[in-house]
Amino acid sequence: MGELKDQGPPQGIQISGSLIARNTLLNLIGQALPLLVAVIAMPFVIRGLGTERFGLLSLAWVVMGYFTIFDLGLGRATTKFVAEALGKGEGGRVSQIIWTAVTVQAIMGAIGALALFVMTDYLVERVLNIPPALIYEAKATFHLLAFAIPVVMLTSSFSGVLEAAQRFSLVNAIRIPSSTLTYLLPLVGLYLGMGLPGIVALILLARLFSLIALIIIDLRINPKLREYSGSFELLPRLFCYGGWITVSGIVSPILVYLDRFLIGSILTMAAVAYYTAPYEAVTRI
Image (cartoon, rainbow, N blue to C red; front, side, top):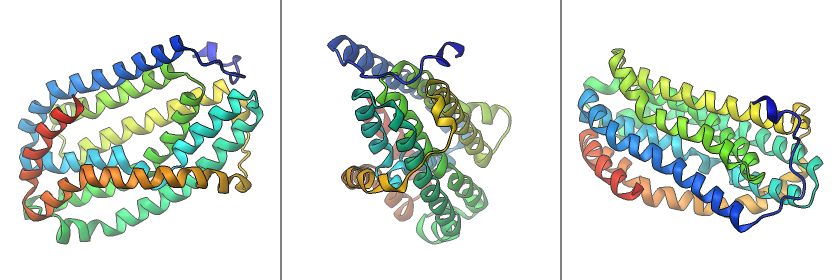
């Protein structure tokens, strides 16, 4: 990573067909490799955890993967406005845009984490149909997931910086291991004799290390980020664009993932497990 230090943010990025094709291929590989690992690993994870616990794990994957909808679209807005600034050769604005978005996301992430932590007992005991023997594990799992919310939200902005700079090779260098570990770490946890909370903790640590890696790379590419320069004057522009992203971001996951929570509340966690495995295989393909 030493070669990144003195490059600085790219100025006046020129978009070409070859660049788009290269980035498209990188993103395709970034989605295909974790999918391949998931297809191979999922049967072993289900067998090791059992259907009830795998149902809970599938809900944990949803929370970790899609809680960015609560960042009010700031992750996508960061990518858009950073790309604009770089395209116009205004690299000096990048730091201000990023720190403004990150500050708000940190606040929203903390609020979201607190809300999930407080609501855990109600979700586990009243909403989801969880067997009494798994109540303790379910509560511990959701408490851990609360800490995942700010990590997931901040990741969207720091990865957005690299995407805006057309550095998809770096994005996928982090995204591929992180996504792959989501499916491999349950096997590691089972081998070490861990329960579901321990497995979720491993996945959370992997996401945290990914965030740290993104921050380090961003700081090396743009040393100006080392000085905080957030400005709340930018918030109206970020929220104006992010608001539209939020609408689609909220509606889409609800349509796609609400069914799992409904199955978990009306039927059982085992039913969620039987539903999730074939659903994920078909939709990801």
